[in-house]
Image 1 (cartoon, rainbow, N blue to C red):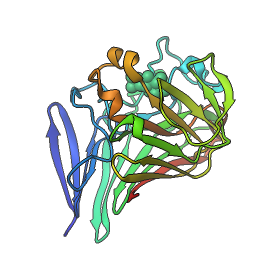
Image 2: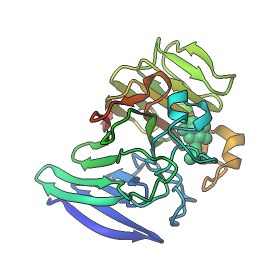
Image 3: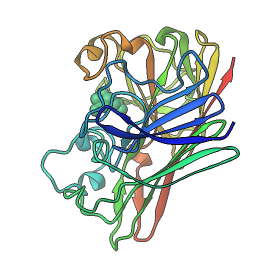
Length: 296
Ligand SMILES: O=P(O)(O)OC[C@H]1O[C@@H](O)[C@H](O)[C@@H](O)[C@@H]1O
């Protein structure tokens, strides 16, 4: 079946939809945010909140928000990243989630379709005066491939942290495990940002908000309830954030049903803390993840 690429609208947001075989991907120009990704009928691969709103200037809950040029709370980032921001109220997860990116290129071939976005509005980031424009290449073939590239065109070094904040759809949080973390160090942000070591695979029994470091290139999300394994093959990243808000935090989140914590899990391919990116003048860095699905 030929690859079909269409511009569509989701309420206030201009979006692009790629259909290929039984897969469908929707990406908003705002934030270059993947909103949904499905393959055949049944459980989606990427989760989009039932309460998501598609409003200009507001990040959508679910999909894959791009966190850039810092991840999370700026005050928790290494000093060199904090020093790059000259404003007074840094938003969580950086500056590009709620602004329009430009579709620079789109094309299809026999194997799939590709969208290339650039965040190039020179007035968009007045409090972050650095000559780095991120580009996000999104390719759908038998897998979903996301590549976030940063190129320092200025004449001073630039430090940044970032994440492809992927929300995965799951059958039930009690029936999933994450493989590939065994023996790796992590920062337990819910208990004083203590550094700990993972023993075995990760299971979920409560609120989880951890930064894993020194990671191997592949992590897997094994979902026995759905009978499938989602694999994340990364490049340019050795850190990931594992997040589930559980019961109480779910009630405080925007665009999030009280019980939605049971149906989603974030595995965020990242460059955070000691895995931050330092770009010398003229240097580039690319953070990539390829997301595949296989039956158990
Ligand atoms: O509500 P936001 O800004 O999209 O953030 C959602 C979550 O994003 C995760 O990456 C953080 O680790 C969590 O602490 C945070 O709650």
